Length: 282
Image (cartoon, rainbow, N blue to C red; front, side):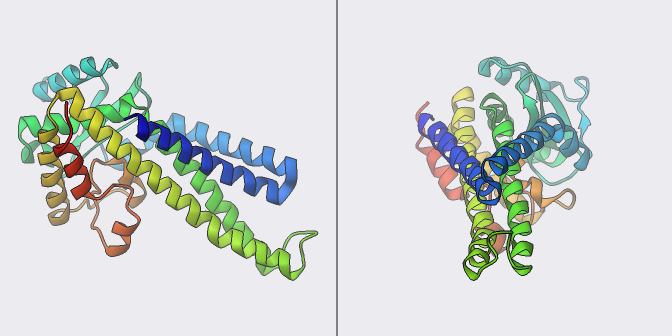
């Protein structure tokens, strides 16, 4: 668990350093400050509003306790074990089997499950999935993922602008062939590096949530069994609403996976996740 935390901190530092280096390249100290302020503003907006947006995208409705008493009870028990406030509970109206967590911090969090997952999994498997999502909340993964996605997005935007600058002869003071070449390298390599680092952060947090969730319920086999069922279900019945940009939020990728999607997946290979869980001692 500690190794995953250190890895995340290191990757976030590299990603932030890449953004700030781009700021320095374009504007020296002024560019550095501008890039930093831009990143902070985007992080602030994502931090406060991303949960409302994603719940709206998937037409999630709050689950009444009277209609879903056992679901609320399980979430309450796991939340107490995790020592965090009980998150709000939502139902996503789709036969696709999946779940996700959202919210800016443990005090303002939500767990959403699809109608399909309630029918597919046994109670112990569902408990494993809910523990995984509550682990994301406990570990503040929503905030970390939001920061990583925002910084990567800023870098991609700057790279897009750099491509235009290269097309029109570079920036002032860098209008020779070397300056244009530097811009092209920046425009091509920066977003690729940002994407690779973001994917590495996301995969690291998924492993950590698997481990934390399994330890919360002391039953890694239940989560491993649930993951296998969910992956097979996603292949047979992929999500038909929403946006692939939100795929990282779900416990398994809910969309139809092409070769390119698998290559750039925010989720670790399912075989590795299940193997780690099967060898985990709780």
